[in-house]
Image 1 (spheres, helix red, strand yellow):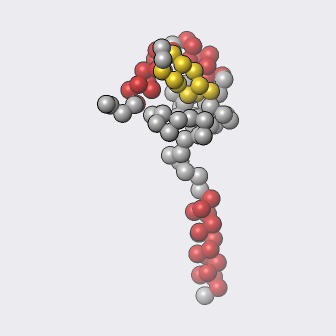
Image 2 (cartoon, one colour; image 1 turned 45 degrees about the vertical axis):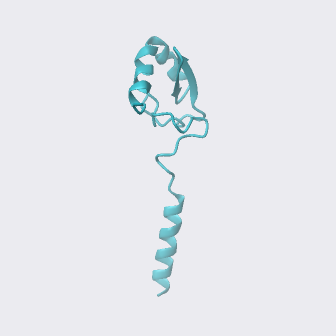
Image 3 (tube, one colour; image 1 turned 120 degrees about the horizontal axis):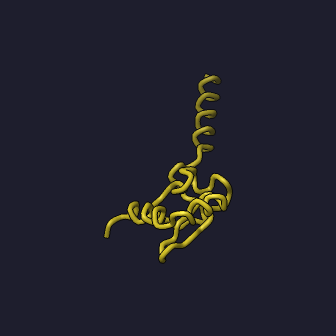
Length: 89
């Protein structure tokens, strides 16, 4: 009986500790359509606070400042990724 209680208690603790994989970092708007950095394909908060860049009025969130260099090489490509992922109106 004691082992069952310990097993159930352990399971409850481990389930509660799992992060929400669909949660966006607090610095990214809830309606932002991407879950990962369009440049590196890493989680938006993989390197700390996400970096926001804007191209032609569209905000794009990147996982780090290093990705800004790559973004600047072809901003239209990454902006299109955000627009394509956005829900259609």
